[in-house]
Structures are given as structure tokens and as C-alpha cells.
Image (cartoon, rainbow, N blue to C red; front, side):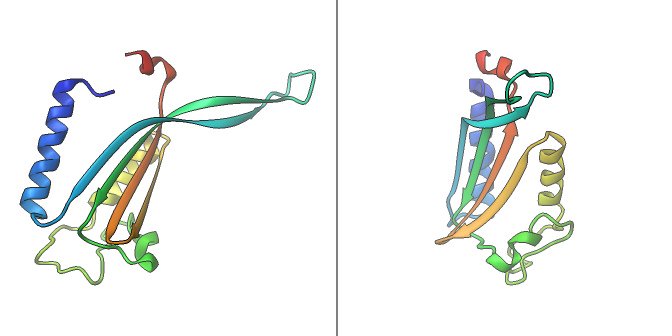
Length: 137
């Protein structure tokens, strides 16, 4: 969980982003801890040698009701300098480097990121491994 000052700062940044860049659109943020099963092969085990454990992940979902990324272009979203072809450059500026940098950071942290655009919403989902000891903090 984020401490209160960080939560307030995050809310402020999202509110600023929505107001400044997308005044008629909506941004949603969801953060949750999820658990997934991970099978490990133990070559020293006497029996079948496979153990299963619960692995904690932090799931961050950011949804935007504005710019829709066509399905055919979603695989290119994280490439450097990629820009949505039907998007108005002058309305939504940028160089196309932001999401490429986000993907590099997520991969560095041994996580994953994906994008989906459906029913008027674009949703980015980030999964990051979570150290079990940090859950108690």
C-alpha cells in the first residue's frame, strides 16, 4: 500500500494530467495485490520434484476513456517513436518515447505490461513481482 502522502501526490498528478491534456475524458487507476501460482522444479526432491507456491504481484491498471489504440496497432504501442496513426499530433503531442521507456522500466523490474482498447477505453495493465516482506510494511 502507498503511504498517504504518495497517494495524495498520485491523485494530484492524475487530476492534473486529466485536466490539462484530456479535459473531457476520464482516467481511472486501480492498484491491487494479486497472487498467482508458480511451479518450481526441484531436482533434489525424492518424489515428483515439482513444488507450487503462491507468488505475490502488484497489479496496476490505468484506464483512459480518450484515445483508442486500434487492435492492429496495439503490438507497436511500446516501440520507440510509435504514434497512433489516426491521432491528431497537434492535439496530443509527444515523441512516442514515453511508453517505450515505461516498458523498459517494467522489464527491468521483471514485470510485464500490456495494452487493450475496448468499448471506448484504453487500459494499460502492469504486473510487477512483489517481495513478500514488503506486504507487511
